[in-house]
Length: 327
Image 1: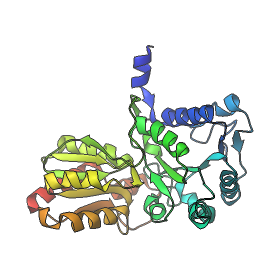
Image 2 (image 1 turned 180 degrees about the vertical axis):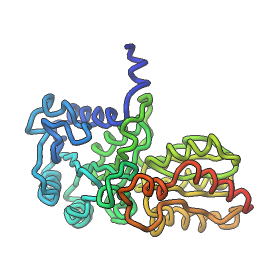
Image 3 (image 1 turned 120 degrees about the vertical axis):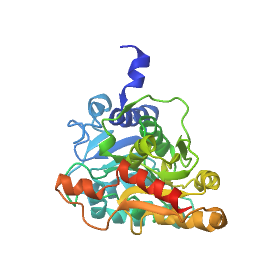
Image 4 (image 1 turned 90 degrees about the horizontal axis):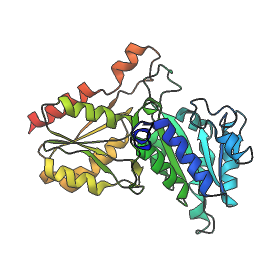
């Protein structure tokens, strides 16, 4: 197989692994810590082969104690290491929130910059795999609400690698959120990475701006193929920093905004984006800003019930068309 063909068929999951490997190769201070990330290659096989390549001192299997190893990783970052910490499911952030929220996010400020905390919290999110209420949550808005944390959510193969590398290089704590429904997605690896904090126009359009991130980028692009309205899809790539300028430029042109996220709609990141756009472009909007997310219920195990709660391409297209009908 030619290198060009290989590049075009790289999987999202392999791009993450490639990013971790590159980070470990380029910087001796980088280490990987997590449950089963070593010889087992991770429960989703993201880290397969890294233990054999870099050894047990840099690819560290941790006990099943998120509070213990996440806290230890924050301490390691304080001493100059650059830990990449895997929290197996985003839901488990609740087990180890204190070292993330009260230590990693605050120490640089509390020491007037004397300490830097160059740490990456890798975790995966999302429903659609019948994993039940405790393994299917999208909690990015909760983490984005914490001052001192950056939050990135790659939606493409290229960003899976490039945002990982950018997160490791950042002197601040970064939460790197994968969506496991994207793991098998294939695509080409680009060679001109966007910086962390810059949104991407995934598809141009004239009638409605759809702002989204993660797995919902793929659903929004599907919606654009069948929608009667012309949809412009903005892939935010990160919630913190939030590239509101790219969003405003698009909405100024279309006059309509639909924010789509897999997370529960109430009190989600969509509300923050809607408020900022409403404040800046109130007189230029042709219709009220609309949000589309999951209802405020625990995600069920039943595949049929689970599908009914998640925003899908058909619902996104319908919401966009209704926005055009409104004005």
